[in-house]
Amino acid sequence: MGSNLDCVEVKIGNNQMKGENFMKHILVTGGAGFIGSNMTDELIKRGYKVTVIDNESTGLKENVNKKARYIKGDIRDNKVMNKVFNEKINVIFHIAGCASTIKSFHDPAADLSTNVSGTINIINYAIKYKVSRILYASSMTSYGIPDKLPIKETQSTRPISYYGITKYAAERYIMATGLRNDLPFKINVTAFRMFNVYGRRQSLENPYQGVVSIFIGNVLRNEPITIFGDGKQSRDFVHIRDVADAWISAIDNKNSFGEVFNLGSGIRVSINELVDVILKSFGKSRKNYKVIYKEERPGDQKHMQADISKAKKILNWRIKIPFYKGMKDTIEWAKQVYK
Image 1 (cartoon, rainbow, N blue to C red):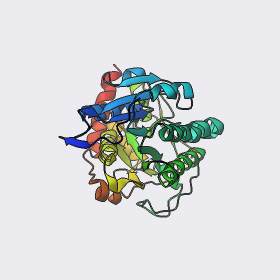
Image 2: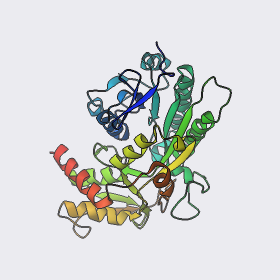
Image 3: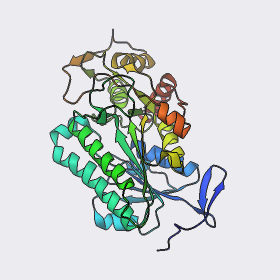
Image 4: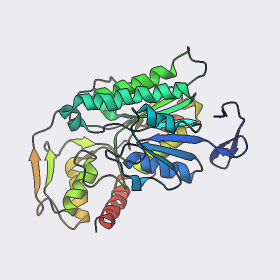
């Protein structure tokens, strides 16, 4: 297996190429899922070579871009991981993991194993195969109950859910790896604390995924919408294409090395407002549609809003898809696929 670590890097258009037309090869873990598959599409569109690994616990093979190399398997399975790395990988986008606050309370051991042990295995393989760049999907749940809004990356991290604990623990493993000086090469790391990501391909049937797709799926099936709390709680919704832009812009940005970034829109939307937007798009309202309010669940964060000034400054990142535009696109997609 040849190494191209010492090749001269050449820029061709917006793509980074190595040596004689060898594209930078990116591994996307969890690449059959909502975030990972959209990220894969965007990487391929911009000229990168992509390998996807996914155990299809929530992801779907049909989500994976046909131009990507696809390997079904678990990131904790060394036999599968050896197969992944039989081709030279230059960058790892580590997105795979359990992504549900409620499920983490039901099965904390599984959450710990996937999010922390899985991440450690990714780090071990990065070291073994000399992968010098890792970007990690962290979470807003790392903050727990914020000291104030909007939340800066420098605020205290006191996760209140098992999921938040495992995502933050894995983040620290990634960041500590970037600080190691005992390796024969440098691993440059970046973590993104993602807020409520939404968009096309978010599952309309998985009750543990995203509140946007859960509510849209409810209405498509003419089911009641259940809100845990009074609906006045608020979230920061960010479109998947904006998220992909941030990740990809960081790949070769040396100023992002060793840094943690919030990825949100910087705007708060109440859950009641979200429901109103969804119902209106179906010609309905809370006055004529059944909306059930239940007690808040453990681990819920009352209000969340990202301060995204750091990403704007260092990554030159801007929100291109505002909430109402993104919701219109997502709902139109959902109506098409649910016919």
